[in-house]
Image (cartoon, rainbow over all chains, first blue to last red; front, side):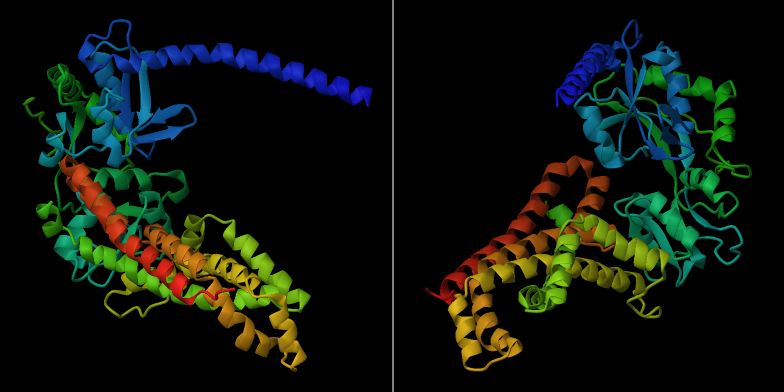
Length: 289
Length: 226
């Protein structure tokens, strides 16, 4: 009995010590988090950090793997942040899921967003955009050996998967609803898994997103992007309505395209054989309104 | 507001929720009654099976059950509950899979509500039924269940309300309903976010409030006074 008590006392002491250490360690990130309050309005950075919203679940664009963030959007964000005067360790990446992007910018949780964020008029009512830094187009992902599906016109009677609430799903409903069976999934990973199982015939969203999924290790060689785009999505950098960095972000994007970094990053994060719509890419940035 | 109602089929979407509720309520009521009879039956194996079902299903999150019906049964195993050539194969298939998931889940709660109804019937009633020579089946059918249903109207009403709201989870199975239309509206009209929330919230109040009033009224009128 006494021995158990000693053991309990010892483990309690150990736990307390550990907790104390943990508590001490916690302070640092908390201080770093304080940087959130200083918005991008700071501009030149100085000693402050920058909080950038990205996707955490978009292979090839914005993906979280442990503490590492990879993808085209992420690297473009790093490049732009660097030009704005923030060093690598001053950047804090946070997740910005599609439906929360406007809110995150409005309440100051993030300073900018690089997350397959299409510039639209309705969104401009609430947020400002720099860019575009890429022009994507809605496309189809099909099995690698599928010769039948060559574009949206060849989808008659086929089962197509897209994410409910996305522009892609809505466009299919509006323009191709008669012929296409649409399965509205929760995530693109779900769609891709269903395509892999053969339950759906094709997955649709922006070409660069599809390319990212096709390039994942577990699906290597299984899929191909059809390459017949039928929309124009201008990926912009989401900024708060009131900001003074838009011009600088645009300058950084222009420089990135001119010095060849843009092409390098694109090649690095998309599978071999993927070519974006060449008539629209690389894009020219719009002026900040 | 009128603009939103004009460009998105919100009413049609809520109708899908209502249809999901009605079909699932029907199947869940039948399955739940069978389970409740099992749980109060004299056969230990039946009692055990009923208890095992309720305790398993009730403790699994609904989303997982719906996902199992959709991604498991259809996505991986290829189970189809609609004809391939029906024209809206995907919509019908998703709807039926969602009804399956919702029914299986809700049946566990219907069973427990009915069991509470059975408990309102005095033991003397069952003893009297036995004394006049009725077997277990006849006792349940003629004496216990009719009174149990009347005693269980209020908890069954609560279960129905929970089911109605749970139908939004059918989105996980790809059924287009109120929650899906809300997502779509949010994607396209972030500038009208508050109006969108209000419309959807009002829609739910319009569905749930009458259900509560009706079941309360029924439980007062039909409940057995003791």
